[in-house]
Length: 487
Image 1 (spheres, one colour):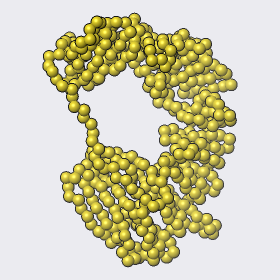
Image 2 (image 1 turned 90 degrees about the horizontal axis):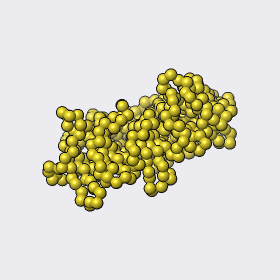
Image 3 (image 1 turned 90 degrees about the vertical axis):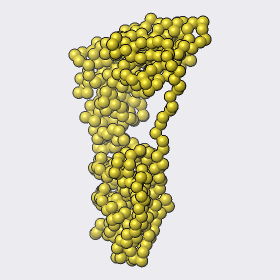
Image 4 (image 1 turned 60 degrees about the horizontal axis):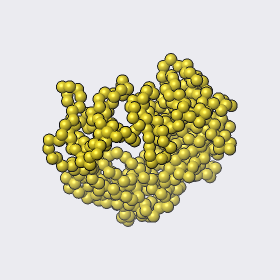
């Protein structure tokens, strides 16, 4: 049960048969498998974000360990660890009558009283100070503490021996304390402020009748335009430019009607018209909204001077039996056997372009944006996407690969199978009996002997939970191909 590591490090749950311990990221066992269960505490429910604490279970009881030592032996019914405190819940889990015992991160009990709850006190004047409101079940034992997380001690009882406490924060650094003492239903309004001379907080009766502060927020800036070719809703308060593009046929040429609007509306809206030479045999105006392509809802943080493009239509034109597109100030020339709207794109609309490959007679596909910039070369037999998806699935010579939304290569088209989920956000990769995985947040090449169920970050290190052929979880693995379990 004892840890063998000499310094605290990232630990990965390691299973040996039915028992669990910890291994480091090089596969060396640092806590010998001893426990019936082990769970990281960096999830939303468990709260801790350091990735170095683990809840363990033995014979139905819970404990807490790290890679160096046992912090709390497995003898508790319910434990919770955030990044500052450990709490033991001694009432039935999920009960409305919650009873908590408070410990520091060394597993030492901090308060003799049983708590109803502990809440953070808003402390904008001194955010480096950790202030907490503690509500005790014992009468006249609630209050506010200043906690020293470095030394793991209560630095000061700022307010003590009250039956309850309510707090309101003001921008001038003062906090109102509304308290009830035993046998009294009168609330006392008090000031709490840090005394730099004594290095402690002072509490005294309120000396003014200040009113509650106004609630201030960031208003909607009204820039939530929507439509085909637009990169998604934006709510950015910076100054930027909105360019609205509209296209129409003018004889056998195209005409761009351009409107420029400063987003802060301090400048004048400008309109102009540009004739763009196409010399086309046929021109078709197409509205993005009528295309059978689900637009992707991108989010891009705009900064001062950026340009946001919006266009409702584009021109598809034919010349010498080939097709091109006019969807910006530049032309995608009529050199393709097929061209169609593919996605609204991060900045400009994207188009799927295809050329016949002679002598095979097969179409080779690529992707270009509205300015004719190549995002994917015309080398693929297939390119597939879904509107909410984060990747493009490619196929070439019977093998599969993946591109991301910028057209950057994630996996070369050389794998036997790449299977997406329904959203096209998660993909299983299979090749030569090995498995890989990719999502928005993690990526593993096909080096694992088991399918991947999900990913997990532990102390900043990414591991993958793998499963057997029946879908049962086996344990963790990493992209180096190391398996953190043995049968």
